[in-house]
Image (cartoon, rainbow, N blue to C red):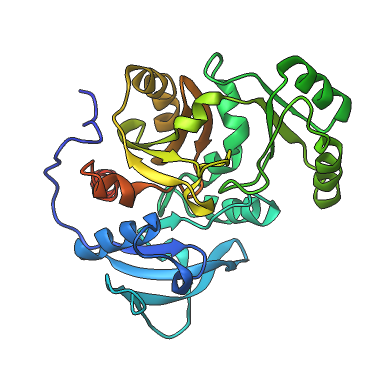
Length: 327
């Protein structure tokens, strides 16, 4: 018998889970838009206890994984959204669930955290599966699904990048392990800044960059589709500000209601089984026109906007799925 779909109403016995959240400082989040806050509020409403720590407070001692953090009680109240307990050190194997929700960059510190959390998963359920988060860098993972991406080059070779632009005329350049639209630039055929931008990238990091054919459809929006356990639950459209190429909400993009198209569902049907197989339970993909551009497995956003536009409650569906797994 196949497992219930993500949007199926589940009949599960009530349970109270101990939930740890690995995230950036909660004091600085925007509670009106933050997906992690929505996840935590839903967990709290279900009777689960919350305990929050920052990734730099994660430790391994003699093979056991500890973190230094604080219990939390949340309120949907701007400026007064969290009441934190005293700092304490906890063995994370004593938790039922760990949400890995800190933002990229996907650097060696991020990778080290996945190695630590891999030691407690799956007895303590880590969302998403830390070994698969490590093995699925967002801009590399997507290249494994042939025919879904626009023309894409990943390299540190300047000559290859110039040749790629000569071929496609209008390209987007972005860091391989960045996030939130950081470092993304459009470079037309006559733009003289390409060499300088490559020099800047090389000064900051030895990592390759991505060159991708510019998609004019981005002017109509970059669609964020949320999937829970491989099943699409809804989408929002992120429209870039006038004159901008980046549509990310954190850099000025505007969220709009949008329906899933036939092409969106085709893309989800292709990638969904692999997401489920890898234990990537909460994922956000980016679709421009008919192309898949990224698969976000670290800390996908967009759930609050989706619900606000009358769409599915992705946080509720996530906790339904977690409850099913923990039962």
